[in-house]
Amino acid sequence: MKKNIIGVDIGGTKIASGIVSADGGLGKTVILPTLAAKGADVSLNQVMVSIEMLLSGIAAGKKSVRGIGICAPGPLDPGRGVVHNPPNLPGWKDVPLAALVRKRFGIDTKLENDANAAGMAEMVWGAAKGYKNIFYITVSTGIGTGIIIGGKIYHGKNGMAGEGGHVTVNYDDKDAVCGCGNTGCVEAIASGLHTVRRLRESLRKRPRVRTCIVDMAGGDLDKVTMRTVAEAARKKDRLAIETIRKQGEVLGIWLGSMISVLDPEIIVIGGGVSMIGELIFKEIRRSAYGHTINVFAAGTPIVRAKLKKNVGVFGAASVFMA
Ligand SMILES: [Zn+2]
Image 1 (tube, rainbow, N blue to C red):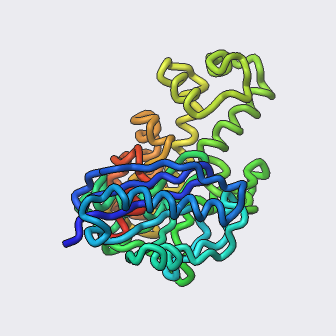
Image 2 (cartoon, protein in one colour; image 1 turned 45 degrees about the vertical axis):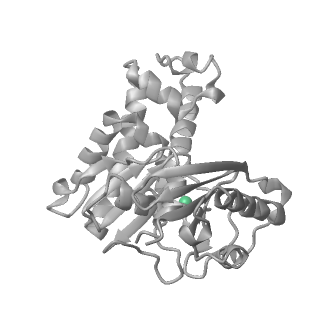
Image 3 (cartoon, helix red, strand yellow; image 1 turned 90 degrees about the horizontal axis):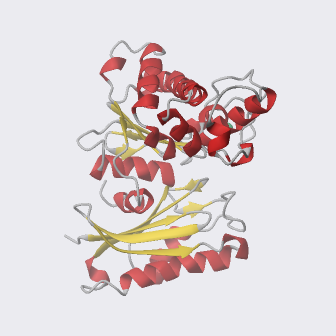
């Protein structure tokens, strides 16, 4: 059995790649700038160079490589291995990435959406080991999700399934305009970026509220991040705790609906916001179990992702483990 898998995680600013073994060990890694602003040819070449650098470090040669897994932000078509036109990869338009890489290196290559891939990696090596029906979410700047059914990623008819971050939770909230163009998506209300945006807006309206959040950001409201809020909450700042509870509540309302729809065995939460820990998880669980018709919901574990650093590389590699 070929034991090495190459995982390549294409982001807007960097391409992280590495050699992952079937048992989840991480060997050599390479990080290159994406150079996205220089256009598709240059950034595509960065992908090829990353893979070349990894292959040159494998003593047993490319015959020991099971496959090259690549994950990128959507929209993309995992079935055909085509990247459509991600907003953070300017110039990429319907690039048949999997075919190009396969042709260049003569190694089987698969393409996957980054949140789907991260969910798969949690099943293979992470917090959802032993489960086959999983709802994975990552909450950072945005909210990404992946649906795994029977041990396989659910792609839907056009490869576009699993965009759970764009489920509308409040169509009436005119403040919640989402990057996708919709109003009221859970991403536009409870992602890290939008939680901080809302907090800033409320502090601008009520500058006299007692809180250490602004001081912690050097007195500059624009420098407040989710990390600042989490840290302030650890110091028992009331506004910070309230902000995180509210975020957890909204995420829970949404997850309650997802439990009603999917009845998953486990929900795994990754991304920066999951690092807040029990304060938000307690609220998410309380809210999710209270907003579903599923009478067994409280038996659905809602847990923190295990893979943190290099989750993209593990995610990309995991598509060869399904
Ligand atoms: Zn949206």
